[in-house]
Length: 523
Image (tube, rainbow, N blue to C red):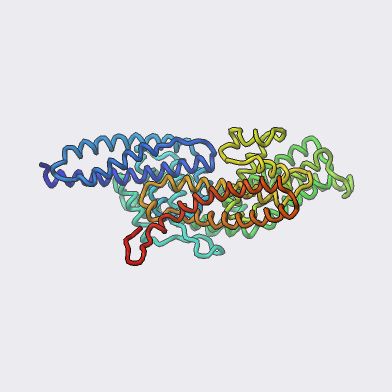
């Protein structure tokens, strides 16, 4: 028979292992979603391993008695070893993901809640082996904690710090998990003063140029890296997050002040480019400038532009404008750019296409368009949908045709083709969210509290609206006597209906299952 003290040790080991399991499982789901949605590459699936561990943990929780202490001790030994191996595997997978991609993922998925962010931060602490934090990994934790700390009460005023008391509880928990020696109060005070100095300097900045020229962002990042373990000390962690949000809010305010002038400058370059013939070196510089602006505008959409990118754009504008203005003067305003003017304008027009529901479909629409743009334009649509790049999107040949008509130069019903490409993008979102819900193994699969349920219900409402539009389009095709087109569109409608029905059941099941019939038991 085990003593009370021995049972207490077993309980603590079980609790610690359960916490590690939850953090690792949450991180596994996260890294899978990131690699599929952002990196668009297959990820290792350890679901079976986690399911086995979950079953063992559940069995242990029901058997923590004095009579079975020896058996439980052996099971915990095995569980701890296997879980440590899984954490190491996930850590290796994470090392192949740059901080940029983590930030990109969370800016696409904007409603991750406090519990998930906390579990991800805990995973990094559990995976830490000592010997100093890698800069990339500390940057990732910093981003997660900033998301956790941020509250945007008024978008015009910028982000503010959430309830400091609640944040302090989270930071104390992380600091306790790290298990390092408590620093001397003078050390903490010195580092806090350095952080506060940066924050005050941020508040004095009056322009983005000043922020960039002072190298303030880089200096602040280096300061955070120098903290190492002390980054998690609760008092310093709170100071860091307050400064992070001050810096973010300041950059947003300064950019809003200058964005019209910045956009006007590079739009003027585009206008002059269309009016004058260019070739040789200038043509190459303009092509690079287009690529740079495209990257910059996508960064703006994701709220992740870099100050050095802004400085680079301004420098290019200052270099290109005088030369284009001079070329315009020499040939007159009636001249046109030689060579691929028509193709260039078609490409610009193609980039301007946006889905009607940008908030729901924007990222998925661009994924479909980008994938099809890389496909062979001469290949039969039936073969295109089977290529390795397109097949994971589960597109239909008619949707390949819709893309080609929408972004081509021929005559077609562009409104119809735009709608069909959007519907294809909607199916991609539907299927990914259904897969994400099906992979949930914690209590949120019963309560429906995971953020994906909120997203899925929005997706379902959007799909319902698109199905009504499909019906309207089919009625018009029948009236116009176009049975072949009608059959193809009807097939696409059925595809969306089938996938949407599956997501609807997954998204609403937790809420339907908690209803009680009058006078009956829970169903």
